[in-house]
Length: 140
Image (cartoon, rainbow, N blue to C red; front, top):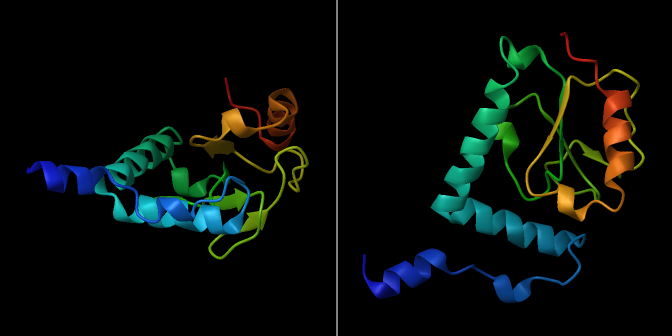
């Protein structure tokens, strides 16, 4: 691979259009395009999703799973029944909600998954408390 093609492999398309506000729809859409166009990133996320799905065996398709921070990503390609969510409403998402105020009934979810989101949450303890209430306890 030449130096020029290696640099283009690493370059982020439209990165100059990114807003400093991570909760801006336009920023999320630019992130989505970057993830779709960069083979390494797409492959990495796909592998994360396959690993998450495999952890829900024996029947992952029978599980009710919520992904947090789904705006820029494509979990439904690998896990079609996953409920996708983000803080802001946009095309391709099932739910717009705050993780600090879940719109899910008690014990209505089997799992909550996310990639690269936890560090952005304003109250991690409240988030985990909400997950504990919304999720069915694991069989032990």
